[in-house]
Length: 154
Image (cartoon, rainbow, N blue to C red; front, side):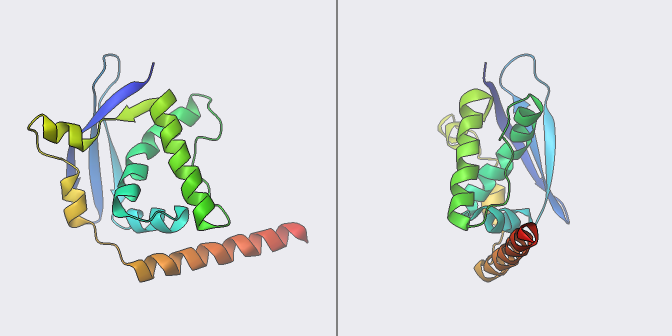
């Protein structure tokens, strides 16, 4: 059975964002995940994500991906890839597999249709990303991966 969650609140702290998950099904307990403010740009650089909404989705699913991995499902955790396009395809595929087989976070759009406020809007309004900084991070990642690949060949 796929567990279902909804984001009940998002709180901005001085250095991080705290995201609260509430179960929509019986048998699960509420939990919270904390992300440093720079996590959105870091994920965009690591996984070649192209929009803030993609970064938000990947970060929302990261706790579920870790639980999915702990549940014995291999290849559930994002890893660095040698090119951004491959990294993006892989992480978005992992999120899709998580939704299908393990756990799903109810989209904020469904909450809005029911007349509730979108708790993710605070992220869309408050998170700032700098494309130059993201590109610089990706270059650092590429350099690291290239150096690791060369070291493995020696």
